[in-house]
Image (cartoon, rainbow, N blue to C red; front, side):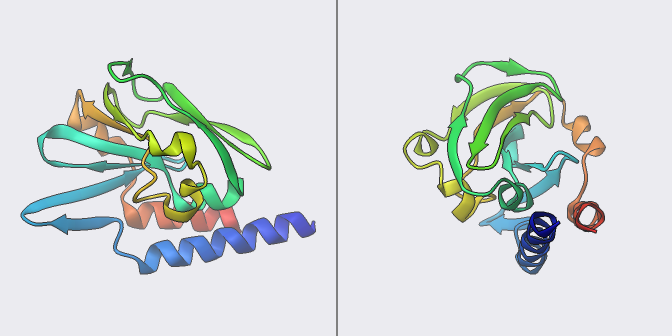
Length: 158
């Protein structure tokens, strides 16, 4: 019971931090970035040209605890929406990471090999897992926006 309370408290703090940040929609120069979320707590930030950064959310890293290992695919691998493309291991658990959309891996975050704890420090910024060229941007319509994701996390925390 105590572990459940602690996990819920950590998740709520992370959710509050996320909601007070401007991560869900950012703008760099004239390029507008849009972030979407899955019920399994992956995020995808779409850039111009249909390339996207994919990783796990701050909510997910808080639930996992200290991340000790991240397994990533090879550049050039192709995945359908919902396919597992890697995994993340923490001191508490291991979890698969799923592709939120279909596409081809164009880059991996090599920094996570030597510094998996970056996921805990900067889950939705510097600790992206892969970059993917999206096959069909219409698949983004099946994902949650920031308000929907916030409600989803609140429902899971209660």
